[in-house]
Image 1 (cartoon, rainbow, N blue to C red):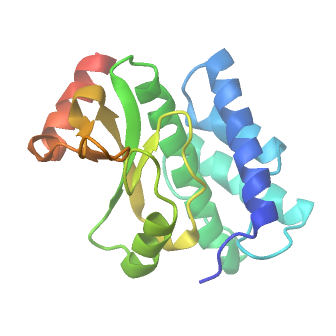
Image 2: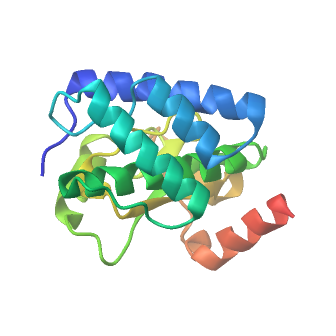
Length: 194
C-alpha cells in the first residue's frame, strides 16, 4: 500500500487548515470540511499524481455519500477506497473540530480498530511520528495526515486530566491508564455536546 509523498502531505496539511477554517466560519459539518478540503486540492491518491478530473470525481462521490448518509459507489471501482477514505476524513474532521472547541480537550488519540488491515504499518507510522504527548496522541491543533495503512483507525478526544508527566526529567506525556476506557471519554464528549 502506497503512502502519500511529502508534497502530497504538505498539500493535505494546507487543505486540512482550510477545512478547519471554513468550519470555524460555518460550523462543524463534514460537508463544509470536505468542500474546503477538496477546493484546496487535499483529495489525493497516495503516491500518485492526481489529476483535477480524478480529484473532482472523488469529491463528487464524497459529497453524495455525506449528504445521503450512505456510500456513493463510483463507476471507477479503483477509486472506491479513496472515496471511502475521504468520507471518513471529513467525518473525523467534523468530530475533531467539535471536540477541540471544549477547553478541557487538549489532544486526540488515534485508536486502531480490530479489523485494521495493516496494523503493523500503522503502528510503525505512529512510532516514527510521536508527538510531545506520546505515541498516537496529537495536540488538538496538529492532527497528522494519516497514511492509507491507518484507514480504519479513528480519533478520540483526550481530556487534560487524562495526561500526566511520564517522569520528572522527561518531557513526554502518557495517558493515565484509569481513563483508557472508551465509555468514560464518550460520556464526557456527550456531556459537551448536549
